[in-house]
Length: 380
Picture 1: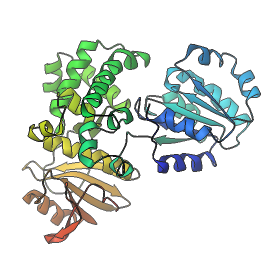
Picture 2: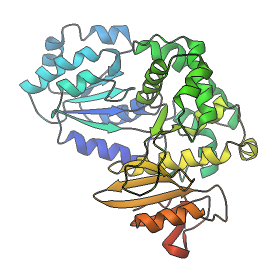
Picture 3: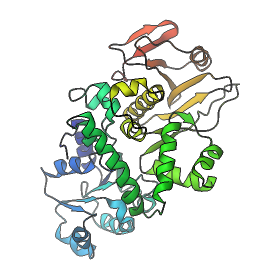
Picture 4: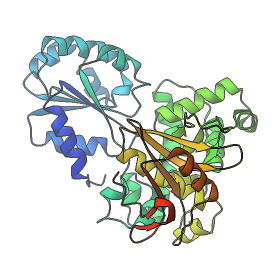
């Protein structure tokens, strides 16, 4: 496993451990959670348990005795989603001793999927999402085009070459379907999940048509929605909701669907090299998803959505917080031009900022207060 971890993530978690009894780092499998945790605990008295390991899991068979023995150490529990029932035990232990920095918990599932934790540890735990590498974290390691092609998973992003990166992603996809989903207690036939994931890759950046998608996979609509929820709660896809607005226009009300990691998207579509990506019809939608993931991760306190009217005017991403609106349009062009619909929506919505995110070298302003920005220039 590559050992590169951005310092900003490490500092943020260390700060949180000074004020909360338990910190949970959640994110997709293989995104660097364990590497980050091991670096954090290297400089402090700690004990690390990998709950995928049967021997480590057995050490918790008498949890009160285990906690008594290691009460003076930071206890790190990796892959906590494998024993979600353990959260009720943690609650009792934290209520006995609420000192900050007692537990560091790692999980490859969202807090929605770990419902026991949100019910049992409310007010006792701080949650932090760890994404695969973002562009701002990798400016000294990779070019934006390499990160876009390979995606942000460390083993893929930092592979020796594109072929090794591609092979790693194919293995990841197979392991996720055959092992990770069953480990979470879901029994989904691998061929069905494989067909769905490939279809979602072709639907990347489009609004969801549940009837059409369910028919293509040959499953019922409720089953489709359940499978989509599982992929979303394991950080594989994002369903970007439509904006709630009082514009006097008919709006598209279905969410847009994206594969969250561009490298996984390209592996599913058999796109191995950058030149092939640029020549592929999915390139524009892939760039859009890559940009949106980076923006949302960097501005996690904002509410993200998109906006599309029935006549086709669209905002690819709208961020809202405290009444302030920021609009984004994604353009895979060195000389990007806003669409007419983007101008129209700016006029109606009067946002605090409006930006075109494009693969340009530096930011510059164009008419109507719209700024063209490279992906690395995202400060609001």
